[in-house]
Image (tube, rainbow, N blue to C red):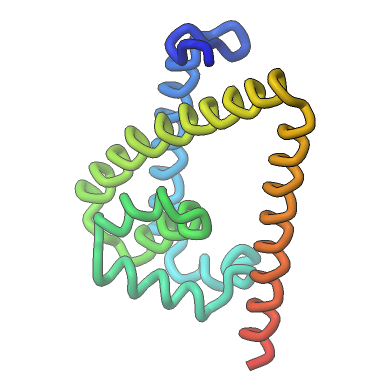
Length: 164
């Protein structure tokens, strides 16, 4: 596996791409907060709010009310919350200073861990592929099958919840 510090993407060192990504993600999180704060509960009736669903929005509100800035940090690690919780935090008008600190900490930890983790997985799979293409294809097939099963399971669960 090659050295992560010598890796590059589009001619830039990987660490710089990750740093730029973290700063951009921080900017997006600030925009989410201020959009939520400005639009308030009107956001819940928007197309995005309807797609998420009132039940889920209320669940996110409860998480934000209970955990505050810690929920903002935690949402980085939960795919569904990552882009819905920040605007709910804005709607609820949690203290912006704590929100900014929590989102900065989230960006500083989530972006590098995710980028370098994906880098390690990709290079690990490529190393397997170089040693044994058959095993690499098998590994890819198992991963794809597991992802397909997860998607089907979630859709069935969502259908059952909407029927209830």
